[in-house]
Image: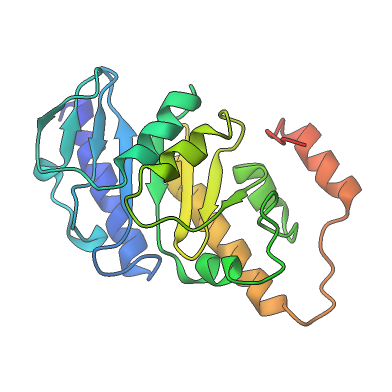
Length: 216
């Protein structure tokens, strides 16, 4: 099996795993990954993460031209913004995961640092998550908003919509977005309690020890 064939299978396997565990439902969510030749494989528009076909993934060449497969997700401007501003991005995944969306609805959600520091893993895998305002799905302005971050964030939360994460490869991106959802779920569970989160000194230690991107 060629590297591209393996990548096609991996994208579909990871997407189905997230679908089966309720991290995104129906035909929501989209995923993309860099190919060895600098192109992209992208989930097609209107498809379900539970039923992606490796042979029908949208295939772009290194110049950004669609050369094979079905029409891509309407959120391509969002994906392109991450690839164009983050040289380390090898994959991008976007979900409509419920707890992350719920946390974005809270009036005190921090737009600069969306996730509260409850566990080390979200900090290690995501860095500081920015929350962007609401945009109509498919609006190119979402991509412009990501570009406005100048590559300083690997993850954003689209308010009232869902998280988007860029990773070094498709497994890393999927692991990180699951960590985002888990942390949002913990935040919802602990809301109203006097939860003991990480201290600023503990956050700083994690950022320093694991060389985490942390835009102050």
